[in-house]
Image 1 (cartoon, helix red, strand yellow):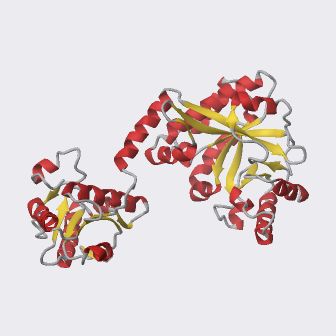
Image 2 (cartoon, helix red, strand yellow; image 1 turned 180 degrees about the vertical axis):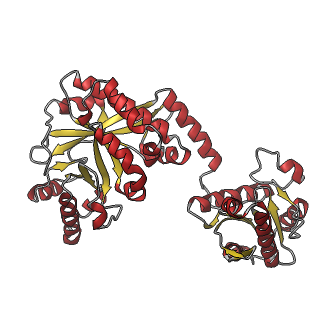
Length: 448
């Protein structure tokens, strides 16, 4: 990075950005920037490398045209050049971002603080409004910072550190991030995404099943399918370690399709043996927005010959609140085909009471966070009971998640809430281990 001519930097797959001379704003070119950073390293001086990328440049291009973008970038460059000290350098990159080397960050003991202060000045300069063709616009930015000698002793290490920090800032919605040891590498994420996609293709996934129980006698009345990745080298990987990756990379659609198929396959196998519990599966808004989701789910259910009313698809309250207008038509289609809808993690999404009346759900699952401190903490207990009463007022069946102690079970029984899920009652296990619990399963009527 920055050690080769700008023309070769642009073509190097190992380089996250290419730096070139910006003739309009008079910013430095690659050679000057490299020399400034190399000089600090050779002298053993602290120095900061700041990588800043403005957000929403594409929106400016769409709304005001490419000439406005060039004017905007020129103004940004001039502002940043105005921040540079006599030994500092600023350059524009091939992806319309900016790189700045700051030599005067103080002593080594204060360098991290000085670097962050410099990054704050950069962010403030990019956040302040710009006047473009008579209109004022304001943009946010993501700023990554690496500091010599704290984050590396070579130009390559410092550039990579600043780039990783910028990715971290961007993932958090903008602002400033300093490089930190062990920060996730976006390239590693891409490789992990490829491994996950191959795992789906090779059928390395499996469903584990956790019972949903009637509180009075602990008998199973339904179950939730929870996906696991049986990695050939590292063993069982839990969803918290790969579902967020699937969400970020779009693999969630393929993952969701696999879950849907395997749930229907298992349901058909159980139904052939006279076992017909309700089976819940988690879906993401991205799956629901994909064209034809309702039709594919209905066809999968029909092809396996299982009863539609045995399938419950779960969507978190937060996802519902954020996307209710776009998701409701799809939910209506799925429910019209006979399947049921459950709102998961109820209470964590902070819906207003007016929004709760609009929930088109047959089942509401109370977020496990509300059981923390129950029943020992009177305040936590009152909050839980209040959430339970609000959920029950919607007319849906109510399931409490995360039940882990006999005292919690007794409290919930005493207040008449009968459907429970949690480690006290059953842990997620493979289908063959869960099947014995199904032999005494019930299919309750709707209601508390």
